Image (cartoon, rainbow, N blue to C red; front, side, top):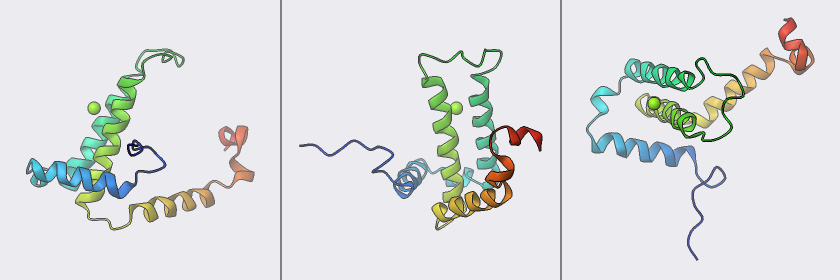
Length: 119
Ligand SMILES: [Mg+2]
């Protein structure tokens, strides 16, 4: 029996980080991966994601999502390259801490449902 394919349940952020670190090292790209360049790349890839929606109705995407998922992956890849470049030891903790901050900033009683647009 073969091993289960990688999926959201069995693949970790650290595994992604290790693969991307090796990908960058194999190409000797560390010198290009400055925090500024990687932040710019994240923004550019986010723009490419947005471009998929330009001048299209909101319900346009019913079929092939590949152009969108490719750009989502690019944003994620550059984000983790930035995390690697900054040598952040515990990205999971950083994200969980920010979600907690957001929970305090946007309490459910005040911001749920239609209340969001009334702020
Ligand atoms: Mg792209």
